Image (cartoon, rainbow, N blue to C red; front, side, top):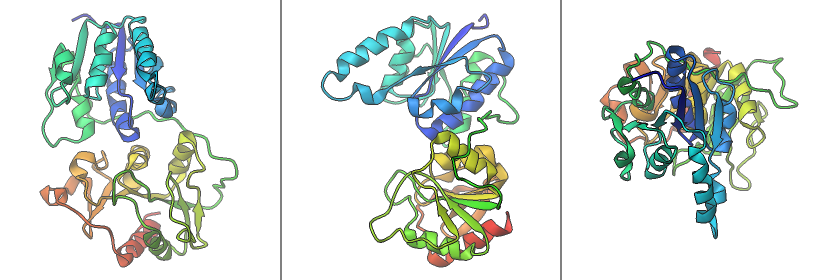
Length: 326
């Protein structure tokens, strides 16, 4: 196949998945330097990819506008615009019926997707990249390089933006970050566990970030915690994480952002999720599960089992660990 001049990458969401897809763009840009890549993405995540050297532009997927009465009409009008650019190649990394339909409606003569795509999405592909069961998301996405005839990178490159610190945030004193929030029942850390963490890190400045909240009366936090929850946009969060001396996070999108920025300075707390599939992408990062801590490089099938929340004493120990590694 001739080198494509225009490539549409379909990966609308979510935060962690968008981060995991960045190495695909980096690899394409390295080998097909002159190719123009446009990323179909949800507006919430556009700031992460717009300054990537391999991304020429974005195609925004405003999902919220397609809900409710008249949503289908608006979505049809939007889908008609997908073919205006006329890409040579479309790559679907979302692996759902809707994303595969977007890739096909772009008019690209070649549509590449993943072999484990769901909802009948594979019917819309001209080629499927073979995905190994149990692979981490980064490796799953990089598999699309195989049918394109491109080598997989030895080292994954994310090319994330520098970010901008929020107004009033000081970097004069070193700090550790705790991100306690997560989507999914039982994945967020409770206020009691955050307090225990702060006790273990009592000698250090602790910055709490993310989007979430606690019930009324539960949010009284120790004095060494600065609560920046719900006060930062994505680029501000990136800048705070970039400046941290150590980061401890629930299994969440910001955890993946932290890992991409500071692989050696990030520990992910996993409860019921499988860290081999959805944990930190770097072999140098740390994982906590069921009272044990390990580098990603040493994880085995033990870590796939159902987990539990940390105890207060375990969170206190994690606070001490964070300060020791600062």
